[in-house]
Length: 160
Length: 106
Image 1 (cartoon, rainbow over the protein chains, first blue to last red):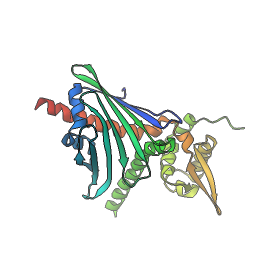
Image 2: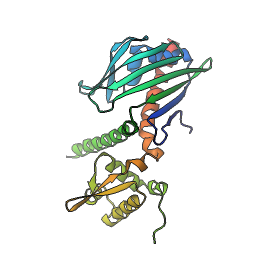
Image 3: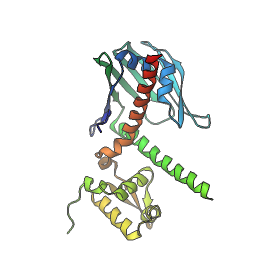
Image 4: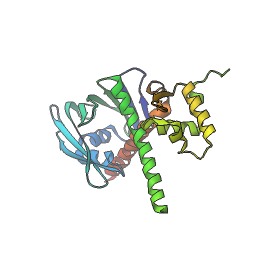
């Protein structure tokens, strides 16, 4: 099966590209990135709920997000500023994970109309260094591992 | 004489992939790694040897113990290493698509 979401992270570069085609009109794809209630929904997963504490969707506007774990605790906070906010076309923003040694990243989202009912997102993310980019790429790898360990632990606990 | 090893040969084996996953989060001794598998210890040693020859793992002497850790430089050449990151975004975007399709039909 062809992969819908593609990641391009070239060796030795401090940037990455994420591209994805959607079975949605470009207006709806953009809306999902522009309205905090919608963003919260798709950024949440069974382990963490995303909350937009602040979301000023405009040039010079800023945003603050929180990720809340299953126990209701804030797992991490992030924030950034919008530099460009062009409806149905482009969002340029900074992103910073608070209390993490990841620096600030620059994110450029380009929304492209393919047909009336399909669209494409090009997400260009630039990091402070190659090392930081590689750390970020590794994070879900390490999390996946610790989640697998937790599941093993849960199963073992049940056997006790 | 050993055949020249390459990284793709190294990750072709599921046990070796599991070892890489295990060591990715922290450096470990051969004994600690072997404790995670039902496989016989010499088999695990053989896998460690192959992974080291391919330079996916490196050894670090710490007192009497030898610890294995991943060689990040070579690890990132492997698409599978990025796969969990890709999967995370793919899951998010699938969700976005589902939510917005419902939104549309409202």
